[in-house]
Amino acid sequence: MLEVKGLRREFADFVAVKDVSLSLAKGEITALLGPNGAGKTTTVKMLAGYLAPTGGEIKIDGIAVANDTKRLQQNVGTVFGGELGFYAKATATQNLQFFANLFNVPRKQRAQRIQEVLQQVDLAAVAEKNVGEFSRGMRQRMHIARALLKDAPILLLDEPTTGLDVEVAAEIRHLIRQVADSGKSILLTSHTMSEVERLADTITLIGGGQSVHTGDVQSVLALAAQVSGELPRDLEAAYLILAPQLRRKER
Image 1 (cartoon, one colour):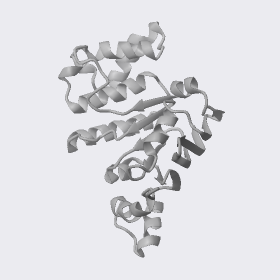
Image 2 (cartoon, one colour; image 1 turned 45 degrees about the vertical axis):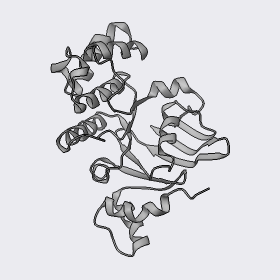
Image 3 (cartoon, one colour; image 1 turned 90 degrees about the vertical axis):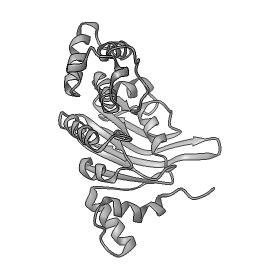
Image 4 (cartoon, rainbow, N blue to C red; image 1 turned 90 degrees about the horizontal axis):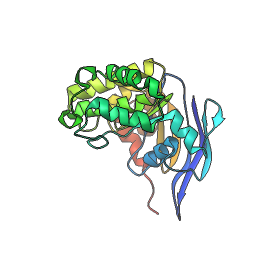
């Protein structure tokens, strides 16, 4: 569904993303892991169509879209989360009506689509409640509902459970898995290794602005074992071993 090769982004004399490659199949969850400053956010912004790449390829379903912002944004839904992004004094339905208009959802389909996505994220019962009264977990569900409203085949989830308590985070992870099982392709960034271990079908490690390894959890454990000399107990232990090598070198 999504294929990225040699993605690059320069800012004046600084190369934020040097050479990132990854792929994402239909219904698959791929996690993009790396320390702060590794180039994850810049990569996500390019894939979302918010930032033009300096070089490299982005293909969606075999079609080159790296320089086609409109097509990228049609095919990619982005979930950044957080407290902002909605009108607090408007209901969940009213907020989604606004975004349905922005996303050019056909007028005759809007009411049905809004009802469908609210049911999908388990917010149908509070559809007429003001978003300002929502808990943080409910707001996070609203962010996912907004992305689903576009009905894009690819979702980019940036730290989807940050700041949530354990129970609510577990609910959001369950929702993410349900969305993937429905056929959406998901690219996930997260600093919670246990979350990545539960959700990700594939992991791409990024360091110094370039992808350095792609594989499943077991392959990342094996990579860390090559460095430390023993197999780590879990993904968090493996990441702690690999992180120093992934940090960007001082310029």
